[in-house]
Every structure is written in C-alpha cells, then in structure tokens.
Length: 249
Image (cartoon, rainbow, N blue to C red; front, side, top):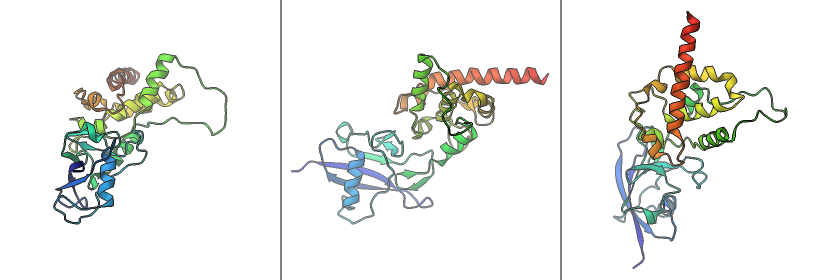
C-alpha cells in the first residue's frame, strides 16, 4: 500500500469567521517538507472524508528559510514550514496559524505589526546619498560576526509567538525588534542616530517590558544571539536614561 502523510489543519476562511479543523491525507514523497504536503492538497483539495474542499491557504516565498513568510505552528511549535521535513515529524502533522498575529486566512497571518515596530524603533541606517563615498569605517572581527548573526533575522515572528510578554494586551515590541536595534546601533554610521533608537526602546513597549523568559532564544530558527542583544540593549538604554537625567539637571 502506498505510503501517505496525514495532516490535521486548523482553518479559518476569513478573519471574522470561526476556526475549524480539517484532516487530509496526501501521497508521501521522499524528502518532502510541510510545504510539499500543502502543495499536494492544493493540487487535489479533498479531505480524508472524500469531500471536496477549498485549497488550504498559506504563505511562502524563498523555500530556503530566509524570508520568514511560511511561519506556522507545526506540532505545537512555531517554525518554518519549508525546513520542517515530514520524516522528522510525528503524524498526524498538526498545522496551525501563529496565534500572536491576526489570521488572514487558514495558515496565513498578517505580520504587519513587526514592521510597524521596526519603524517605531527606527531600525534602519540613514544615508547621505546613493553614491560611492569610499570604504566605510572598520569594525572588529568580533563585532562584525555578532552583527552578521543579528542581520540573519527573517522577521518570521517565531520569537514573538513564543514570548509571553508579546500579546494583544501588551505594547511590548518583542525580541526581534530589540535584536535589530542592537544591529543598527553597532553599525558605525547607525550610531549617529543611536539616541533615537534608545529613546524608542526606552519608552512604552520597549525593553523594560521584556520579562527575560528567554523563550525567544530557544525558538529562533536562526539561533540568533538574542540573549546578548537584549542584555546589551538593557545596558545601553539604562546608560542613555542616566545621561538624559543628568543633562536635565
């Protein structure tokens, strides 16, 4: 008998509708990932009861764990569907949308709040112009490696999903934002607008709302050095506030 893959998927037609579970069984393929299984359902949208249904909606782009678009809860863990291999998962494979973001449809969520918070924290580097002005300032190899690790953030939302302090009742911007602020404060050019980032991170929803559960460190698909980033930004924000207080006097 041909080998198959069993999936149990939490579905929701529109943001206002009630979610429901639907089960599927698709043909097994060697080295298939969760995206491959979802594509099989898309080709033949029939559930285990033999009933025709609508194709499951999900989001994806790069298919190589770089874009962060295919984040979902797979067997009760937030991760990327493209790197989740069927052979490594217990069946039936349960697929759910992330719970900390508004559901758009089925497994697709709206992660716009991440990008809104990145804007609030001014997580970018201002440039004087788009012309070559020679080599930039040198940084130590240790700093470069740390910055590179932080730059691998996909804004996938997994750390937000795991963070108990990031929820609809809190204004906390989340660990991914703190990591990116650390990245841009490390950059020699980025340091010129460092105080603006520290002001944002020291205000409402900033680093003071971090409960230090460290769930983000455990869940991050890229293994980003968030513990160090959060610790260093705590120190930076504290120093900024002390200097600001002294100047006020």
